[in-house]
Image 1 (cartoon, rainbow, N blue to C red):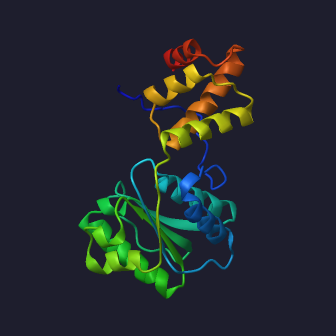
Image 2 (image 1 turned 45 degrees about the vertical axis):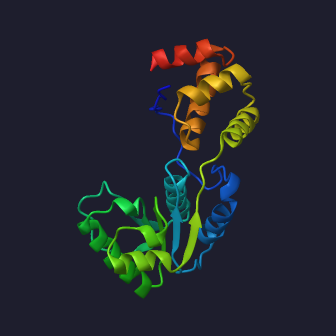
Length: 224
């Protein structure tokens, strides 16, 4: 069955607090301590795992945590075709989807990495593969792998169901088994999308003064 992508306007900025760790608790706790420390370690951290495991969420959450502390971060992902020069005001570097970097992006990432090491700035990177399997220039690949490396796992169906139920209960939203099945078979199953959907359902149910049912979900989608 084709799953629907969720494209709504009520998405909240990712945060470390909203990350539903499950089997990824070790990486989550590491980043909580690292991002929250004013004297964070310059030793790099690399996250790897499949789509939907939470890599980008964690990088964006660290970026938001730094913003709240009044700090800035250098950000690079494959969509940034012409990366800027390294900015010494950056507190850390955030490198997302490194496995997809072009030659130009790899050159920039390596140059940023060297500058960050010189200035004792931290680096948090993420990709789909473990460091040893990355098809990147060798000097960049080895730097990505010499620090902390965590594999992130996509939550299982029972774990996603339990997380969604817990988040709904926290909002005072009742999701019947029928509604839960409908959501998990028809919408993108990554947790960010599920939480955005739940936020939107909660708001729409309050607005219409109706319980969350399958007809309400259909009505909400038709109103978009």
